[in-house]
Length: 361
Image 1: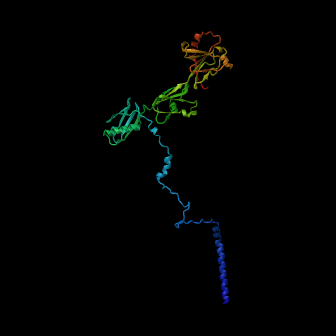
Image 2: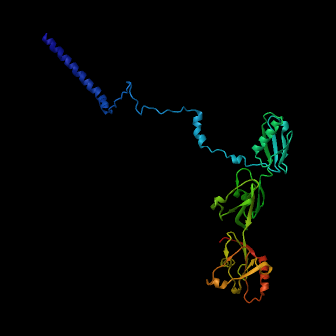
Image 3: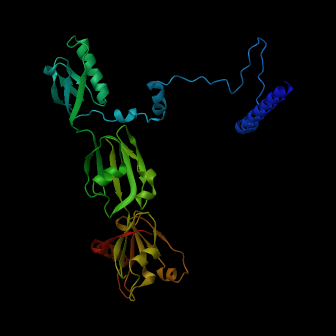
């Protein structure tokens, strides 16, 4: 009996040893993973016995996603239409318009705005539409139709067939002066380009007279390269008048290499600069007799003479003298016996055959 007990104990020990080996073989990886896990944070219990919520557990309330909320950022960033552009086109005398009333084709009318700004329409007689935008004119006609009891809740649309008053008048030194239509947002360079650009005699000063402020013209100074002064590209509107002035001219005549008229686009030119641009004085020139003939003053024929010490100026012994617009710099021939009274007449006669050059000092 003791032998049986000892044999049973040995079998039980062997079974336990096998189970222990099996457990160590399969549970060792799981125990390693458990050791790598960070220690858990103890849960705090509130006064009512419920666990307290941590900041991570508190969810930020979210607004339900709807088509309206999804489009809201786009609407905020979208460029709003400029109301001034929609109302920039105003009706004026000479405009040919077509008026339509929705659902009433019998009232469709095509008429021209009169010189007094009135437009004749059936049933409602004359309507003053001058200086009104299309929206304002449409509302006015709708009101007249409804107040007269002719149409209930009318919807009027106006279409301009001929823009007689929607033009800008361009004058002066451009290739093709005239009236150019201006529809929508247009600027000075657009109109000048449509007219073929500036001529060779154009100055850099432009006058823009707006229709709503005719007493205060706007002076614009253009750079030599238009792209260098983008602020000079001002906005123009229908009814404006643009004038491109002619550049001032300085004439140099007499015994010089190339008698000519010099266009000064920046309004500044001196005696030495003019002589240099004219090719310099000839060998036979009488430098001491050089003089400036200028309009105005109490001289004969409304002219005045100013003696110019050209020889000393060329030797840097006398200061340079600035010239003004329409001045005549006369360099006489040495040995010529011309009376002082005839000197002005001779110089004026010489200016009629000179060549005009543009000067960009």
